[in-house]
Length: 400
Image (cartoon, rainbow, N blue to C red; front, side, top):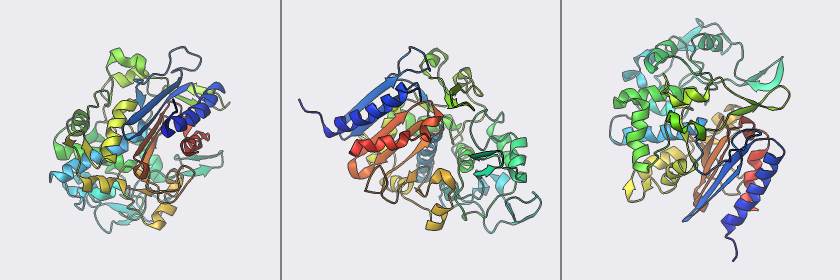
């Protein structure tokens, strides 16, 4: 019996990934490819470096910034029912952000500002053009990119415990207190001017919670997770399921994988003080597949419409100018940006056909949809190095 092209492609990728596991670059992962009626899942390795518990299809992963796409979709359900408008200023729901001031210079003092030329809009949050976000650069102490540049506005955000960058350790503030503190800072750029990563999703999570009158977790559950059957996705997991959550690893100074415990595994069994729309969810490959395939199907899951075709189009279409793509920091890599997802606008090493969209998670997870091929691809690890050690190029073996 001959294997399908999808099976052959997955076999090539899984062999490359298994070789990386064998070399100790990561303890294990779960690969998923889905095309049409065919879905293939390949668990590789174990959940703990040197351990014996195998990766399984139902392993629960911290999906990090793959949360952003879920937030964008939930936001669009509120746009569809008239609760929000894309072009409306955020001031109605986030009065803390009314009357914004903007730094004259990014590295300047906090009181050297000019008035914002216009309010921040809901769409500015979705497209990461609100005028505030991560600033990547290097310092004399390290050749590696950092978001901890010693600018006054960045130092002030750190002192306020806003956690606008990597999500660990978590902010201790609830959404209202977080927003109050964030509202004391000026913007870095004028609204709509520049793409900047991450912070807009934190702000958007607070906005849609207030708009809906629900916690962010309840909004996600009622608008997306229940309709899609995503029963194991949320901002925390039951304590009796903690054993299904792998250890999170990152390379230490010696290059060896080191467990990361700034947010402990037990923390993931409790509702967070601040549900992060930027990076807060846990999920499984099958749960996230339901979300991914809903987008690929134009907003339909089974017999049920979850999002309108127009909403899906807005989420998955690039909204950035060429200049904004070019100045979008290393994390964007010249790609376009829709609402909560990157959009590939030029051929690359994975495909000669642009239009692919998706996003990665900083704990070591990858997802993209390829509409031209009706294809979903996921690689779930809990090793952050997976995103920058060359492993992503191995996904191009699907097409060899």
